[in-house]
Length: 267
Ligand code: SAM
Image (cartoon, rainbow, N blue to C red; front, side):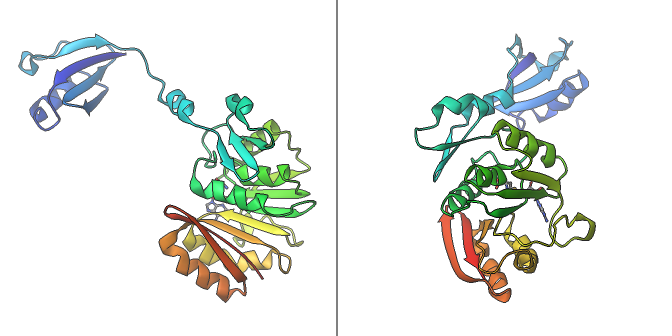
């Protein structure tokens, strides 16, 4: 990677930035009093730019760098790890392997962690679980590993579905235990749900969507089935509380982690 280092900032060198672009720079960056101009090939720069220096730097794979910084996440009885951290799962913990990638849900977000924790507090043996907004499939896979009889993960983003299926496979979760489909609740063609109501519903979305979907949650759940909702900013808790009240949910319990909240309830 060829980089031209030029002392100064975007502000002090404003009049030189166009000259760098015109000379063929593919990117400009400012770091600690230095402008870094990226080039594919060494270019003849106008003399007025002056006192810079050409350097050949090692390529940096930012994605690999990011992945290296991820640490295992303990969420109640489950420890969420990347495929290369499987040896780091403490004895007695259930390992849940997620390949960090394009779908949300590596376990590093407080909402995912709280939801896995809340699932681990339920007796899921043989239960039918619905995961709305499955992303990487992390919550549906956690439910399957925790003993659920059958789990359905749905997401409106089609990109997530093959990723979730692959993550399920990596965890040894069979298609007969966890199914992933593009879809959601109550939106015509995208409503993929059968008539039989679920024993547990978990959804990591956002407060406004929980407000819109609360009636659908109620319609797709067995009486007194537990509901787990997260993705809720603590400031938006009143909206979720009133939606749950409106739809006849009771025993609303809240847990918080920083600015994020998780709500459990049942009807
Ligand atoms: N379940 C994962 C977790 O807990 O880490 C991922 C949660 S991520 C915050 C939210 C996911 O919901 C995204 O994958 C997004 O595509 C999906 N989503 C957004 N709106 C939705 C809707 N109306 N119905 C179903 N999925 C939705």
